[in-house]
Image (cartoon, rainbow, N blue to C red; front, side, top):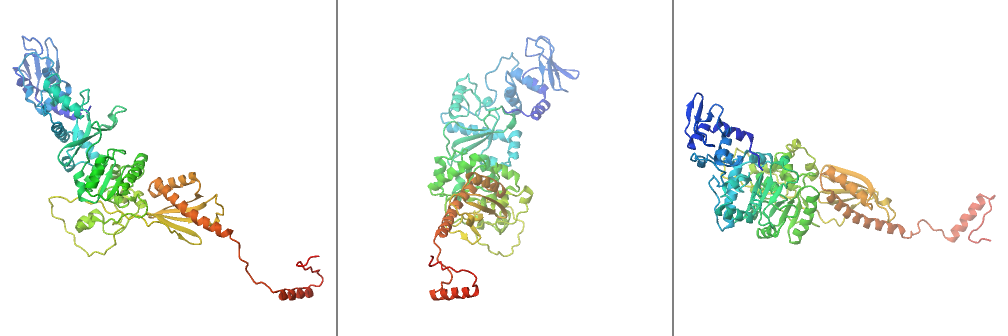
Amino acid sequence: MARIPNNELDRLKREVALVRLVESSGIELKKHGKDYLGLCPFHDDKEPSLVISPDKNLWHCLGACNEGGDVIQWVMKRQGVSFRHAVELLKGGDAALSVPATPVKRNTTAKHSMPLAADPDDQKQLAVVIDYYHDTLKQSPDALEYLNSRGLGGAELIDCFKLGYANRTLGYRLPARNRKAGAEVRGQLQRVGILRNTGHEHFSGSLVVPVIDGDGLVTEVYGRKILGKRLRKGTPQHLYLPGAHQGVWNAAALADSEEVILCEALIDAMTFWVNGYRNVTASYGTSGFTEDHLTVFKQANIKRVLIAYDRDEAGNTAAVKLAEQLQAEGFACYRLHFPKGMDANAYALEVRPANKSLGVVIRSAEWMGDGRSGERASDLTSLDPAERLATDGEAGTLRQGRLLGTSSNEANTLPPLAAESQPQVEEPQVKIEAPSPKPETPPLPAAAVPPAPENPEHPEVTDHEINIEYGNRHYRVRGLQKNSSYEVMKVNVLVKVGEVIHVDTFDLYSAKHRQAFARVAATECGIEDKTIQRDLGKLLLQLEGLQDKAIQEALQPKEPTGYTMEDTEREQALTLLKEALPQMEWVDYRNPL
């Protein structure tokens, strides 16, 4: 249940005039010194016993009931409603507060105007609920503060995607369940998943993000609890409508680009969106890529999918599995890498400005296929010089290791960037003046990522070392020639990513050694452990071929070398030696006795 902020309660108690509220309900008050007196409506009062103190905005009955309190307690007692319901009535200044002075029973009829009435169309009911949540968010300090804390504040995002907030007040806007209309509406909302069987709101206390298709139909609703540590243990943070996921968030924007950024969660997708990368959508969690996503990608003629799942074990595993599925369907897949343990939203909050840091991650994406990736043209040329400069800079490249090893302060001083797949062109000096206001800011495209490497069939081999590249990772191997057995491959391996290196000597045939090397190298170079492990597997196969060739050459019989004497020359040499050393007994070993 979403807590009503104390400042909101204090405001109501201070600003709602109790005297006017009591008089509006038909009770006649008379001035008595600083206070007002009247007949108490909560018992059979013959003499005025109700005392209203305007200075303190409090009331008290000196008669039989001995009740008292502030404006909220007055509405609760007078209308027969709950505390929260009373607050909602006071906040809305509802006309139902004016009722005749009759004895009060517990009221079962909603006092608010009802946005929902019986309607056989589920979509109409869903649309009304989404609009109600949308209006609620705009008036909720807690929800707006949460969005700001996630870097998602601003009316554009809220209005474009009809973000809402479920603060457990929807039930007060419905007919009572003991009325026919109320039973029908509540039953319908339970059927579509807005209400649970208990009658409670399914998304209570959650930021609400609807998924709306091109026809304006609500196909899915996502809820994210915003209370954090105040939630009861075991309360799920993420909620959806019951049943299978349907629809694709932000599907309409995907038709304008050949590539799409695919996030694990809607919070991450909205992070890219607010920072200018509008060709973005989200799965419904690590295992939530659906047939609807695949259909939309094909209809939009998407060629490249930039997988921006979280940098944790679940996200890494899901990204690899999804890439295999998408590549089988003909899509080129790239992996966006964040620092270990981070997601897109956490990274954008940590490394500012977010639009530039996210752009660097995009351009540092890693090709997830085999061999060479498809060509990718940069869309940045469509921007004017001021926009291009503000977005990505004009020249230079940046490797993953450099990116993921920078601090938030260093991120602001990074050299200008450009897609590695683009030739560097010297541009004329342009005088950039302050841009005039534009009706709309064009969305920033996802910058092209570097192409994948050539298929490494032929590593560079010298007498001392072997050099080979996989993507943006350069490997140097030394000491292979010392391994004369097929059982051991102890070598010195250096991996370099940009300006960052890691080097160690270990046995490539040892799985334990390979894992240890990959773990440390990945941490130092800012890439995934599994990426290094895959590289080591490829490297092992390459080195096995070179090692086998060297061993086979060593086993070949050696051709005789040097000068071979004739028999006459040998006899002359022996004669000469005998004359020079007469004391020695010479034996002709060619003719032993």
